[in-house]
View 1 (cartoon, one colour):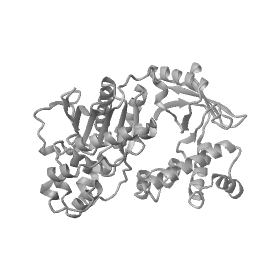
View 2 (cartoon, helix red, strand yellow):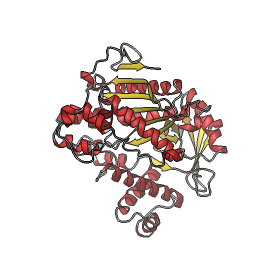
View 3 (tube, helix red, strand yellow):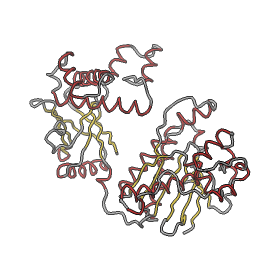
View 4 (cartoon, one colour):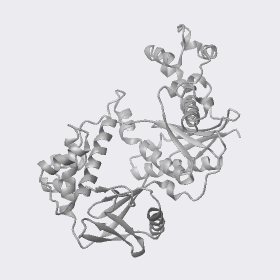
Length: 444
C-alpha cells in the first residue's frame, strides 16, 4: 500500500466537521470494547449520543465506525491495551505544561478523517472524487454541500495522480482517502502502477531474514536446489546515528537494491518473516531495548520493499517465522545465522507458494513449518552441543527447546562477527558516505 500526502487549499474551514468525526471515532472505539457488532454500535451512537447530522451524514458516520473497529483490531493484534488519541508525545507535552489543554484538544479533534471503498459500488465511497484535470479534489460532505480542494503538489505527482484517476474511474480498484485540516492522504494498492508482467523463472525464490543489525537476502532456485545469490547488509553502524532521515533513506536504498536484484534474477516470489513488533522490555539491557523498540524501523523497510515488488509485479508473501533461525542453523552449519535463517524462510515460502497458492497436489502433504529432518547428519554436525540429547523421536522443535533449556542456543548460531567473508564481495551501499556495508556472493 502506498500513501501520497498532498497539501490543499480551500475557502471553507473543516474544523467543526473534523471534530465531530473524531468524536464519533472515539465513541465507537470504546463501544467496540463491549461488542464487535458494527450494526449495534451504529444504532447505539444514533440513539444515545448527540451527533450533529448537519455536519455528518450516515455514510460518514459509518466510515468513522469502520475506522474505529480497524483501530481496535490493530491494537489487539499488537497486544496494545491503551491508546491515546492525539498521540502519546502530545499527551506528554500537555502533562508537562508545554502545550495547553485547549491546544491538546485541538490536536485530538483534528486527526485525519477516513473515507474508504470503491467509488463505483452501491455503498462505496462517493464522498471524495479526483478531478485532476482541474487540479482539485471534490469533497461532497452532504448531498448539498460540495467543496473544491485545490491541490498543491509537484509535476511528477500530477502525472501520478492523472494515472491513478484513469485507473479508479474505469476499474473497481479501491482507494482510501484521509482528510485533515491542511492535507489529504491518498492510499492505494501500488500494483495498479504495474506497467508489464514480470518475467520470472518458476520456483526461483528470494527470501529475507531481517533483524536490527543485519538484513540477509538469499535467492535459491528449487529447480536444481542451488543458491545462486546471497548477501548480508550490515546496518549496525547506521543504528548508531540519531539522524532519522539518514536511517530512513538508507533502509529504503536496501529495499530498492533487493527489488532490483529480484527483477534481474527473475525471482518468482519473495518471502519474509511475519512478525509483530511490540515495544517492550526484552530484559537484555537499555541498549538492546532502544535498538529493537526505537532505532530499527523494520516496517519502513518491509513496506517500501513490498511497494517496489508490487510495482514490478513480483509476488511477495509473509511467512510464519517460528523456529526459522534454529532450523536454518541446524541444516546449514557453514552459513552465518542470518543467511541460514533466510534460506529456511525461502524454503517455507516455496512450499507455501506451491501448496496454497498454486494448489500443486505434489505439495499437499508437505509441511510448511519444518523440513524433513536428517537426524544422523544433524547429530554429526552438532555433536558438540547435542551429544547428551538422545530422545526416541528427534525433531527441530525438540532440539530448539532442549538447547534453550540448556542455554546453548547461542552455540548454534554462526554469528556475523565470527564468519569469514574473505570469499565474498564487500562494499558500501551506493556511496562512500553510506553507513551500510554490503557483503554478497554470486554462485550463478
